[in-house]
Length: 88
Image (cartoon, rainbow, N blue to C red; front, side, top):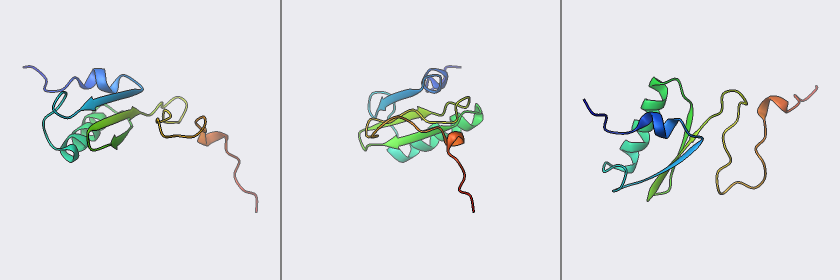
């Protein structure tokens, strides 16, 4: 049986951009949910960005606890575990 989508390829990279009509034919919302479901089944955490013409899949790096920087981000990523807690 052939798989409909190359999940291992898409979810195996830090960032993947897929285009409606090229990589998938369903609605943006359906594809975004399919991506989340596939990631969850594989134990992968993702951020899905819907730009209305494409979907950007950003895979969370579990070892560093951060998401890759998206193209609209200003500055380097911040590691959450390095942020000090307020004292009070």
